[in-house]
Image (cartoon, rainbow, N blue to C red; front, side):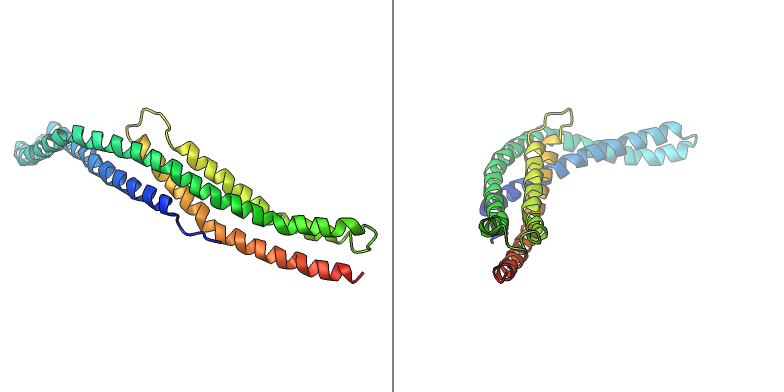
Length: 212
């Protein structure tokens, strides 16, 4: 079963990375402002005039840095908002692709369980029927794992488009959604392997069952 990142998920990833780059650049303004405020505080707290004079040159450089970054801030914030919007749209398509993978996984994960039940029902008098309980219960395991992945994927959906007072909530949301979908796809091989193991176990039990 294909569990590699899908084309649409990779497209979503690319846009999320662009948003991350813009976010990082905007964050440098926040850092520059904190540095400027720190210098001002140190100057105000100092009782040594010579130290204040030394800090004055740092203050000038810090003010220049903040001024330059503030000139670029509106453009960066607009670009970030546009990129997050693109990412949210790309997420919807990627979500559909990953969801289709889980739908196929869910179908295959219950097949061994379904086949075994259908096999033993016509022969309820077989003395091994009671022993089938343990096998059928174990066969449900892959389906339960698949349901957990579906729940995780729902969390990815809820992470996108959250409205809050945090100006960076949008980029945080799409980053979180991407991380969840990557983790979901990374777990698909484990579920697929568990399904194959249970299919083999059910097949082995059917052979024993038919021997009476």
